[in-house]
Image (cartoon, rainbow, N blue to C red; front, side, top):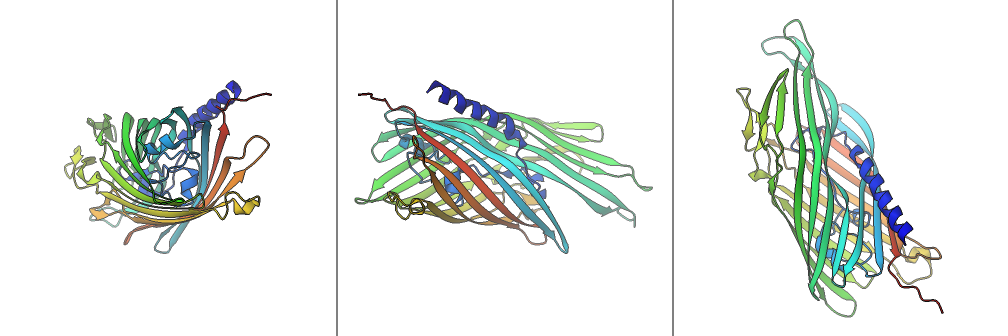
Length: 416
């Protein structure tokens, strides 16, 4: 037992040290705090991330902390996820491809008390990673200069959560997290005979907290059918980090320049025994109420409104198992599909950023040996199209792999 616990936390510590390697190659990551990350686990990624109503005792569902109260009393769960993606960027006749690979998440969960489940882990929050060069013409001149755009960093979060079953249909929960990371963006032009070189660097180091609350109402409809209503609320607040803009060698600082928005989400899920699970979610993040640091027309780095906008997301998915109790392997495999639509949370030159359409499909393969028949290997594929009028179009194909270790660590052994 002690060796297993030690190995589990050792794996989690290793994941923590590797997590900062997460990244992206998208030029859209230069806006806001970067591309907002997908915080879903391997089970729901095959369903395109729909999981607010997901409530099962063998899954760590970090999207809704109220689900932790369903964790099996004899179970200790560790879940690790990685992904690899290939993206095709298209602008007019220009096409560029890029590939990245990430360690996506490392989470664990266990039952603390009869009605109280706990979870912990590390999750992505946002990613920044891009590098490109464009040619710009000097005003009132035919001279052109090269401008280099480069950015890196992002935010991550370590969390601990609890879910409590208040009474039989109702469970509530909370995730408390420590959010950290750095945001760095650089714009540099090369010198010409008409102009000197110029550079601007935007940077910030963030160390703050996050709080998210959830509830689930789990209503039986018959012998096999169950309906679950899930909802979450994320607390908006200032991140307490200064935003710095250095133009050549002259820095300007905006105190407390970044914030998280209030967020709301709701989902409805239907279970038919252990064979069929359907979930549909909708969420709203109130970015449009937040100001954002930027240079104004007078060259002053100040907080401005109208640069961000509210973000909406709709996701739905299906998980199907032909016969969970069958001795035949492929009858016990999970087959999943899903789709979704997301609006951007930022504007580009006063115009809306790109919208996102996505489709996914995946499998959950049960792993069985002499001492464990409850662990699962989750594999899914996802296609994401990111596009806006007269802007770069992105087509991303992503492979997600998640391994859920689910063992009876707390069972009492009896020897006759």
